[in-house]
Length: 261
Image 1: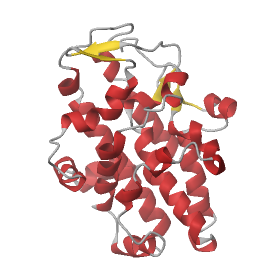
Image 2: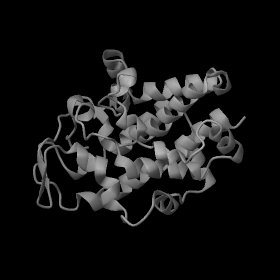
Image 3: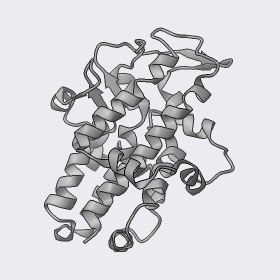
Image 4: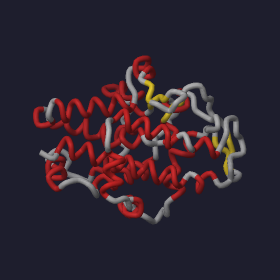
């Protein structure tokens, strides 16, 4: 893996650093919705009686609201040099995306969502549908010991930071005329055995896998790159397809686990 990673400041404090953008987050949810049981859909509808995709970036839009400002750090996570989840960032900063998903699991599964207030169920649903996507966004993994690409140029366009390129990349890769459900249909091509393999394991296992796949973007553009590979977008397609699809399958797995009863 070529060295080319981000500082946490770039990851979490820039106002435009929203994992996947609206279309990417909607695609993750759309893929998940294709794999929800009818009972899961019915139980979720008791709390959110509209398409979940409408809340795809709710956590981004409200991350600075005082009541939930503590979720600011939840959008990213750290991995060590071996591309394995590193909980030290959570301990130092008060949370990360793995921690956020664990909170939702505790509230919706271990406590049982039926024992929560309606507003608590809605908030935890908004957390999981957004943060499952964020965990799979390549630039939301901070890898230990590697420095960021800051100002850079891609095909003649200068970017103040590398990060927003991958936040916006679903909108660059997929036909702008397509709706999230149509993109989801194109990406949702794996069989049950393949999906079962992707959804096996814990949230931490998924973070480890997400870090391993995400790190591949740095094979395209090395550390301190200014003029990025002109084929960066297309070369990133297999990575983005994989991460959006995996996030969708894993989101469905958790929602069915929590609400299919």
